[in-house]
Image (cartoon, rainbow, N blue to C red; front, side):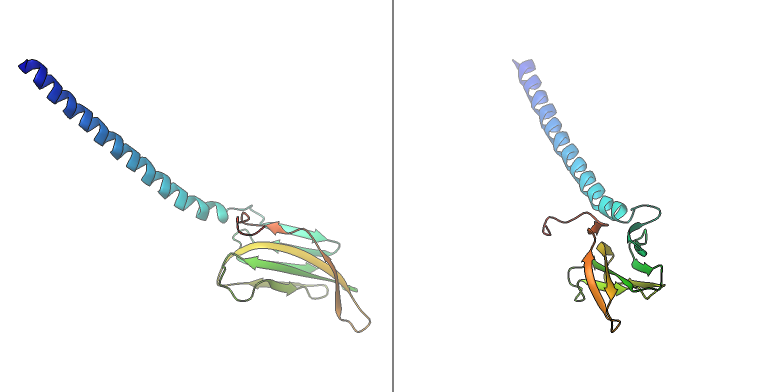
Length: 153
């Protein structure tokens, strides 16, 4: 009987340690998962491509740098066509939303925000009227540089 009692005590001690070990293992894996999850968005959000992102139409072109720090819009020709980039950054409290940067005739213009990185952009085009004012015709499909959030559809 004494042997059985000692065996049951030892068995319960081993089971208790196993449960404790399982709880520690679960906590370690949970902490590791949280740490990896916290680090991954920062690494992948800025990864992009080595050339960055771009969109073009006619002689107009928009380029977002690989680090998402700036938007550059260019007009490749001096004529009656005009181009602009409309973009937003990933900072929800930035008051200048959405941003707009227009390309000068035959040149480029760059815009950036110190409060966040480029999130989405699109190239818009139009023509100059008789008084040399821009008349916007349409915009291309938005390019999501960073994954689209669930709250924007």
